Image 1 (cartoon, rainbow, N blue to C red):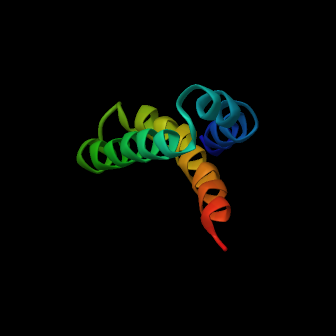
Image 2 (cartoon, rainbow, N blue to C red; image 1 turned 90 degrees about the horizontal axis):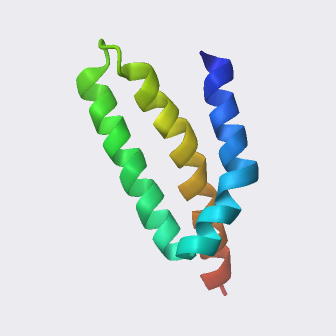
Amino acid sequence: FYSALSLGFLLTSFGLVGLFTKRFGEEKTVLIAAGVDFAAIVLFSLLAPSEFAFGLLMVVSFFAPLWGTVLASVISRHAP
C-alpha cells in the first residue's frame, strides 16, 4: 500500500510536473491539482470504508506533490 503511494509521489515529482506546467502553466497547474486533490480528500473522507478508498488515495498521491512542487516555484518567482 505504502509502496504504491510512494510510487505515485515519485512518478508525479519526476515526470508529471513538467508535463502539466508546459501544458497549463504554473498558476493553472496549482489550481487544477489543488482542486482535484481537495475533491479526492473530501471523497475519501466520505467513502473511506469502501472499495474506492485506495483509488482516491492514489489520486491524492499524484496530485498533492504536483501542486506542492509547483506552488513552491510560483512563490519563489514572486518573492523579492
